[in-house]
Length: 152
Image 1 (cartoon, rainbow, N blue to C red):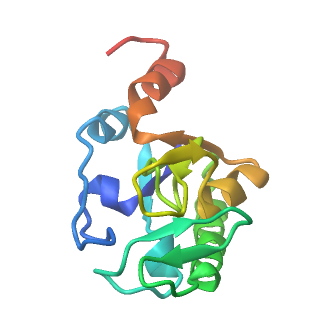
Image 2 (image 1 turned 135 degrees about the horizontal axis):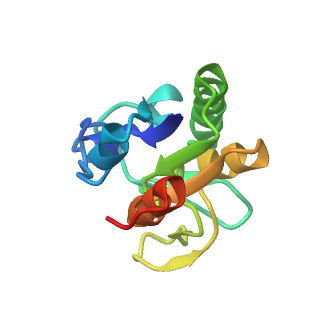
């Protein structure tokens, strides 16, 4: 199975601060024979690394800390992530939690205060709207159990 994965979770230094967040549990999926397809919607949308942190605001706009509207870049990146999922036949995605692009279920509230609110990032929402099941990195063990029926 091909699984779409936030590139930062594979250690690629593409996060807003120029770092990666390697997630060792992803190697268990690879060891099971799954192909991990890395994407960074922000980079695919044309944003640089590093870049100013951004948050999704009520109403769906994405704005960076300096107040610049980067909604267009986030939407373009989400579309490209969806294209990658389709090209590789990905029906599952593991994305970076709380991200304005990749977060699912909880994202920052748009005030840059560290407050989490219910919601999903631009790419996570688009992927789910098109039938891709989205998991956050804290759900990798749960996904492994579902795919194999075996606890790790």
